[in-house]
Image (cartoon, rainbow, N blue to C red; front, top):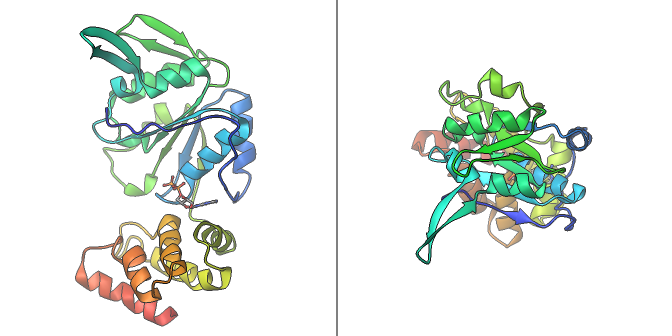
Length: 268
Ligand code: ADP
């Protein structure tokens, strides 16, 4: 299976996350009440970091699955595998999380195949069960199990959107790129570049984000600003670092890239 599973033992030191509002309180309240959570927002704005931070803070193990268009329910639930001439059942990450009372984070859930949502429905209502057709089991989620999913509503793909019947099963929160007063300390901390040198990068990021929908499909993510700042902190020139981390990842079109570079010249 191609899903990427990450298990962090609970109670580990929480990864750094700078809250932008009351998202930590809402997540904690959802967890206490066994409610599933949906995070909506553009790629690279801090959703995965937020979930890792909350899982560690709440002392729960975390299974993260990066969903893709080939990911099926069996990838999440598990399958029979041949091991040394014997057929053995191997739990998928969702089943492990349900058994252990862990947090299961399905990143970009809309990318997954349709049969995945069918599996999520009985888990997201008050039954909290996971039927495993292949083994005949019907697992009741252990205390502490929490389902968290994310998606990016900005892609505007009518075929890849969550149906209301699925969306309405989650407590939902909207994420966006942090405001400059949050993004500057985040980028400085993540990259090691001092805040004064991060400021113009964040100003540039916001100018690039304003082009979303015109020349660019997506604005520059906080992740890319961290990359640029990291390269500069390592001694790379502004010009090269910004081109490699904040221009080239946004477009393949030579004219568009030239326009973006003009914005850079205006700021630096
Ligand atoms: P997403 O899951 O939304 O695609 P990530 O959680 O991977 O994005 O965020 C990308 C990077 O941005 C993180 O690795 C982290 O360096 C940084 N980041 C964004 N927002 C925050 C925040 N509020 N606190 C700490 N780091 C953040």
